[in-house]
Image 1 (cartoon, helix red, strand yellow):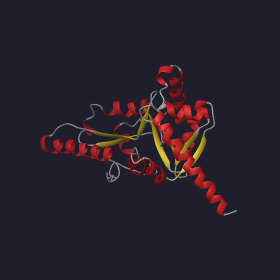
Image 2: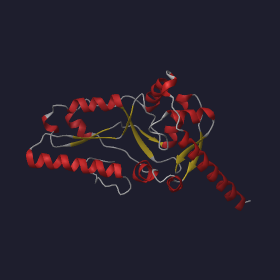
Image 3: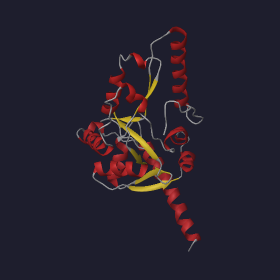
Length: 231
């Protein structure tokens, strides 16, 4: 379980290191001047306009749904069994609003996350179910994905390749009625429906598609060669 006292260190991802540095600036201001600040740490938070997957297009998230519906290979890092926490934005808002103006929140840090834990295999299957298809999943080692796209180092080795389950008990001490009530199965159905409702939202990341297709071909060929060794 990750608590607020778990060390915040990330040697793989500049994005995370920048967030850690921002937290230290805020803490220093509170210590030295009494600046009234509360640090909030959500896990991967999504809503109607974002489809949270481990290997996808953040700027054009409908790309993963389009791939699933076309029957294209869906790349899942590792064996897909690491555990992740996804939080619907409406659930995050409950905790955030509960902390607003709370005097005991000043100078403190809090997680605000769902307590539903899903494997990446389950997450991709639920995205596929919301899209009305069964995804054609290919498990690729994280180091193979990073080798094909160096920008994935932070995203995977610094984040999503690891299991993350969060303890929200500190939040509940101040917001005792906090409870995340939107399971990912329901939230992702709303998200896919939002994209389906307007074709202008359905932008496709063609560069990412080409990169994933190339990686899938290389890895599927490697699997065929490995199978030949045992023949």
